[in-house]
Length: 453
Ligand code: GCO
Image 1 (cartoon, rainbow, N blue to C red):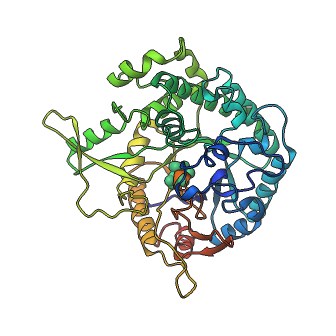
Image 2 (cartoon, rainbow, N blue to C red; image 1 turned 90 degrees about the vertical axis):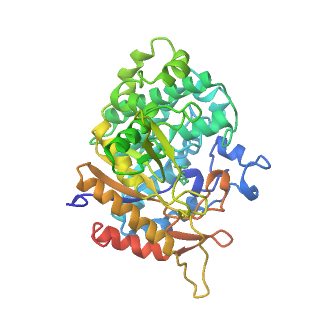
Image 3 (tube, rainbow, N blue to C red; image 1 turned 45 degrees about the vertical axis):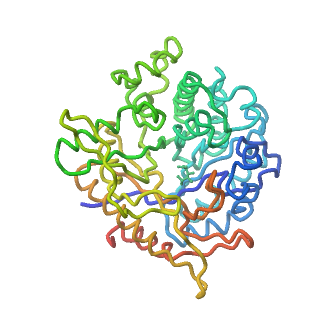
């Protein structure tokens, strides 16, 4: 069986990570424009002011995608480029940029998938309290409507949010990424609720304004995989995947997906009951009617798995990965089983077609003396992860697509430009793009619908 006939192969990027033109053509500031200029926050004091200069070079990038033969291109819109104050007046030049990009994609035969929010929150709204403000979901609804009206005649595929656990957990709880603040658990729980309300309102707006829309969501989480095939270990890993951890409660599947997909918080979880529930706004259950909108696909960004076994009581017990497990340059373990157990467990729980909205590897890439970029590790990574995903589909999960992160090397948040995830190498001095060996390999994967792996 392997991959479906209409499998959605794709590549992904995000606005702040590639666009540059941070202060051009009427764009407002985002929290990343501000944060990345605070000394000491980003490795080697990098920032996204220019990044890949995609804003000026999008035609070259679309031409690369056409050569790659990708079906789908996942990109995000910079909210502050379109609405410099986050709400109110629209910046026509921002709209023009995305219109041009979308037209170029469609002319190249590529389906655009528009992500409304990939972390670059408008600074003006942040100053008004951001996601904590009771109006925040209406601000997001307004922004969605502006996008839906401007692009909805040509863009049918939409994603509301990318990884809420990261921009709230890292950005607002641990303070490790923009805006770089540490708020209380209660504040972050209320923000999370507002983010999910924003999701629901955005889906409703897209359904109303975009004919034949295809709408999804893209959270992320380290997959809990069983360390052996023993059914007790499988059950322990499954339970662990959907339950809360005292310390890492933000990096959780069910907190972010049960309300959106099932219309309820994971009320039975003791950590949820004790730590989070008391902070939810009164009458939060009523909001579920808005939060839980039928989705066409359930996206997950999946990169890694941790391993679990059942102890004598059947409780999940963490198991160390084998000594010598290969790692990417950002220290993520090579754990292809993530693309077997992750989508399998997610499909069982949410029963909605799954798209792997991000997966990829950061490697030691550079231009070799022969002028080429050789990246055998990435080719091996993609092969192994796709084999696992193929097996997952063969075993019954409805897997609708796979999107490689990323098309281009880009600004990797706190790591600046030190991590290379792309199929295309970026020379940040000249802004020249150089196709890596994995570019040709992935083209072949997509052209054969994965038969070559
Ligand atoms: C994230 C984002 C991407 C990253 C990618 C590699 O997960 O952090 O969605 O913007 O660049 O995942 O870390």
